[in-house]
Amino acid sequence: MTTVRVEQGDITQSDADAIIVNLFEGVTTPGGGTGAVDAALDGALSALIADKEITGKQGETATIHTFGKLPARRVVIAGLGKRERFNTDVVRSVSGGVARRLRQLGAKRAAVIAHGAGIGGLDAGDSAQATAEGTLLGLYEFKRYRSSNGSSDDGKSLDDLVIVERDEHRVQTLAAGAAKGTLLAECAILARDLVNEPANVVNPARMAEVATDVANDAGLPITVLGREDMMERGMGAMLAVTQGSANEPRLIIMEYAGDPEHPENNVAIVGKGITFDSGGISIKPAASMWEMKGDMSGGASVIGAMKGIAALKPKINVFGVVPAVENMPSGTAQRPGDIIRAMNGKTIEVDNTDAEGRLILADAICYIKEVRKARRVVDIATLTGAVVVALGHVASGVMGTSQELVDSVLSASKATGEKMWQLPLFEEYKRQNRSDYADVKNTGGRPAGSITAALFIGEFTDGVEWAHLDIAGTFMSERAAGHVVKGATGVPTRTLVRLVEDLARVA
Image (cartoon, rainbow, N blue to C red):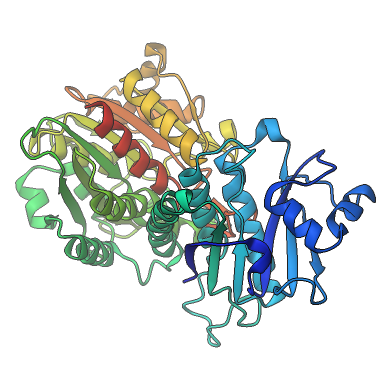
C-alpha cells in the first residue's frame, strides 16, 4: 500500500518523480505553492491558464515537464473546482483521481502541497486526512485472483506520497491528519476486500474468521454464536433464512469498551451479513445475481469500522454485530407462506424469501438489546432495490425512530462525503406489513418498499434509539470516479467510525 507522510520543506525543491499543485476554477494568477512552482517554471502555469488549457475545474488534471528547471521531472496541476464549493470531499475526490493519474505516468514517488489548508480555508489536519483517504482509496485494486497479480496499469505503483509543508508549526497537525486518513482508508479497504471476494470464499464462517482476526489484532473481545446457540435463544428468523444453505450461520459480536465505567453509554452497529443472496425459493433473476456476493456489505462495513474504532479509542462502548448467513434455495429452504418466530416471540409470515435481510437483522437486534443491553442501535444493510429507485447510486437511505440519532448519522456522513438522505417512517406505511396469519409479514409490497422494509425492522427495536441505513444503491460502483473505484465502495465504513466519535463527544 502507498505510504502517505508529511515533511517540512519547499515543494519546488522536491526531487520526487512528480509534484502536485492545485488551482481553483477562475484563478488567473496562481499563489501559494502553485505560484512558487509557476515562478520556478518562468510562468508556464500562468501561460497555460491564459490560454485556457487549464481551467481549475474539479477533477481536471494537466501534466507538464520541468526540463530541469525543478528537481522533479513533472508537475501535475489538479483542478479544485469553484472555491465556494470547496470542502474535504473535493480534496478526497481530487486526490483519488490524481493518484491514479500518477500511477499511469509510472511515478513511484510524488510530493503534494496541502490542498486548501491555506486560502482554501480548510483545517490542515482535515486536508491531510482527506488527501490520505482519497489517495489510498483511489489507488485501490482487488487483484487477488489475477494470474499475473498485476494492476490495470501494467504493474505500475505509486509507492510514496509526501505532503510538503513549508510552515514547521503545521507539520505535526498535518502528520496526525495523514495518519488518521491512512487508518480510515485501511478500514474501508478491509470492507471493500470482503465485499469483492467471491461467495465461495467468504461464507459466514469466513466472515467470523476475519472478524476474529481484526478483534484479536485490536485486543477486542469477540463472541461468535453458531446454530445451536441460535436455537437455544429462539432465533427463529435467522435460522429460517439459513436453513436452505449448506453453510452454517454465525452471529458475530465484537465489543469495544471505551467507557467501561458507564456501560449505558453504548451504541450497537449491526450489519447485514448475507454472504450470498440467491433470493431463496423466491429466486432472483440471473442477470446481475453475481452482485449478491456483496449482500454482506453492511456486515463488512461493521468489521472495518470496529478496526478503526479500536485504534482511535473514543470514550464510548460499541458493539459490532454481524448476523452472517447464506440465503439459498433447496429442499430444506424456507417457503413463502411459512410462519416463523423471532427471538422476541413475535411471529412473522414469510411473504417473500428474498426479503431475508430484515429477518436476520430482527434477531440480531433482539439479541444485542435484550442480552447485551444496547441503548442505541444503527443497522446497515443492502436491503432494498426500492432505495435505488428512490435515490439512485448517489446516496444511501436513512430512516429511524430517533431523530437525534438519524441527525447524528447524517452529520457524520456529511463529514465523510458518503452521501445519505432521510426518508420518512410515517405510521400509515405500517399497514402494508400487516399479516392475516401472523403478527407481521416480511414484505409490504412494491410501494415505498425501502420504507416498509425499515418499518419491519423497527418492529424489533422497542426500547432503543434506532437508525437504519439502506446502502443497496451505494455498496457497489460501476465506474471509477475520484476516490471511488469500480467494485465495492466500502460505504459506510468511514461514516460509522465518525458517528461513533461524534456520539462519544456528546455523551
